[in-house]
Each structure stands twice: as structure tokens, then as C-alpha cells.
Amino acid sequence: MPSRFAPLAAAALAIALRPGTAFACAVCFGGQDTDWSKAFLAGTAVMLVLPPAILIGGGIVIYRAIKRQEARVAERDALASSGRTVVAATPSPSPIRPRHLRSV
Image (cartoon, rainbow, N blue to C red; front, side, top):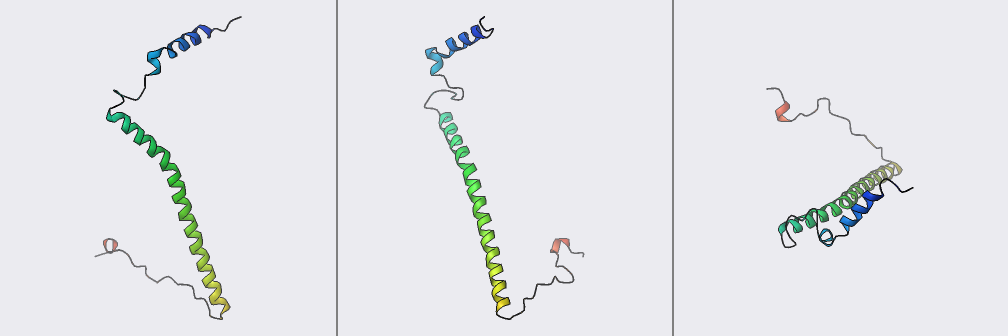
């Protein structure tokens, strides 16, 4: 028993294999020498480069934050092993507010 979609698939295949369809482009509004083609190519390049750049940038930020924290811990441990007492910074009793938030 043939499928109900066989005639539809055959028609779609016949349309797709026409020579004029093979040269058609859904996004090239004109010809090969227009600015649209170059713009779509540049947009594709941006979309391909941006996600890895964001991931690499985020990785660098996280790596640098970890290294800063390791340096702080190493400095604290060095001070503690030398016999000095480590004094934690205490917050000021009244926080300094920006000028635009101060009362007049």
C-alpha cells in the first residue's frame, strides 16, 4: 500500500531538482554582487564568533577571580605564619553615601 505522502514527496523532489531552484537563495535579495550578500556573510561571521568569545571572556574573568582569591588566602596565611595578627577590616559606623543621596 503506497503512502499518502508519496505524491507530495515526489512533487517536492521534482520542484527541488529544477535547475532554477538550485540557484535560488532565500536571503540574497538581488544578485551575487549586492551589499546584502556581504551583510549576511558578515552577520553570520559575527554569530559564529560571538558565543565562543563570550565563553572565553567569562572563563578568563573566572580564572582571574580565582587567582586573586588564592593570592589573598596565601597572603593571609603568610601573615598568620609570621606571627602577625590578621585584623579584619571593620565597617565604618556610618557608611559614606554618594552626594546625590545625602540629605541637604
